[in-house]
Image (cartoon, rainbow over all chains, first blue to last red; front, side):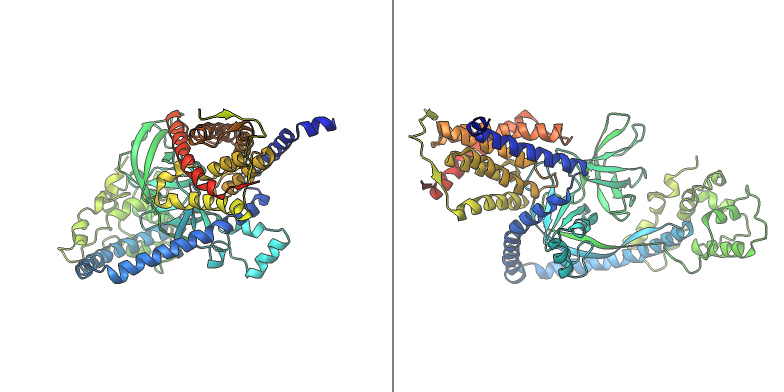
Length: 422
Length: 172
């Protein structure tokens, strides 16, 4: 036996190592992909590779900055003038949008929506990638030391954990932090090291993003494929999707805040199992990322409007629609509050809770059958939102883009014009 | 004739200094991670795999070859989002195979290196595909055209790369 082993020593070693590797893979698969023990290997390798990448990126940026900021300044004056004009235009537009936003907040408050708002982001430089076609990841130059992820109390704590072999805190840090650019969603932070992090891109086959189509309001799951494309999953075959329709985050995955641009629909085809196969072109150029923003803090809150009180959207509807009998006056506070809130929140002084508002609600798109769907509070307020959404322009210049867009208000997604009575 | 059968006595066995043994794989890993950011086509190449093949056929020791493959593969795995061990396993097989071939054949000239790299790149892809699909249930995007063109590109790159790395060889 001994002779046999020594004779086939090399093969025995090969088989042993392969067996250990297969065993390790099996353990990781069993532990849903990431074993605690493999964490250390990642930390070591990333720690060896990324400092060089950081140095190169910094020196590259330094040379580039020197050239662009000090040497090559031709056309800056003209660009400055153009940007100033653009700022003026955007200011006008902002006035209009802020009115819309306030109104949307009021309506959301009525519905009791809870939304996630981005309260803190951190810019980071992309310094590298996985280098593999089968794994789409990037490295950024910020780690837990810079505030990515769940930061330990201090560095000593982390070192102590590491010494004890308890790297649980390391693994949890930074999981599922959203990474975006000005263009759109990029991915999420998967692993966090001391000064670098690994970001899983949305076109990796193991990623998933909850999204919503802007016009049709259909929700689905955005996934990467092995070929690096991005597809929208879980949309039924009988739905109609337009090419070029924008795809936004739905907020349902609890990672990406709602409303961030993800991409546009570039191809729609019938897929297997009665689902459509929708290909999405990412809004962010995932192959040429240089700088990204990591959303380090989100605040989940319901928009609070002082004058809303404790009124519910359903109460407003029941107050307004004649088909529903009036509520008994046993709750006068709510009724009065609801009326006042509705009148004020909808920014339409013409709407009084006492008066049947059928003629006012109907044109805005609220179907007459709205009381039947009172358990779906979105339908009512969204329908109502469109009518008061077009107040007479007060601060915008009639010639401004904002003023022009007033006339387009009914065609916005979610408006009554796109939600005809059924 | 590019590949010739040579007796063990005739075969040159090389060794490498510690800085080269550690530095070359690290540089290969670094370039593999850094360059695709600027030149996306670099993902067609598998520089760590080429380094494994080079060390394996130069050292002509099966154990050293498979260990080199296992360690470089582990490092390669650490840069991806996949479970650790996938590249390690495939590079182990390639390291063992390349060193076994190196023991039997003289693969010092460009033609031999081209063919050897072509073969081991395809073997690497087959093993990777089998493990990823069969064991990890990963969806793999494989086409023969893509694999063949990648193998050819890597083989051409290997000829140039091995010529550079030959400078670091030390005779035993």
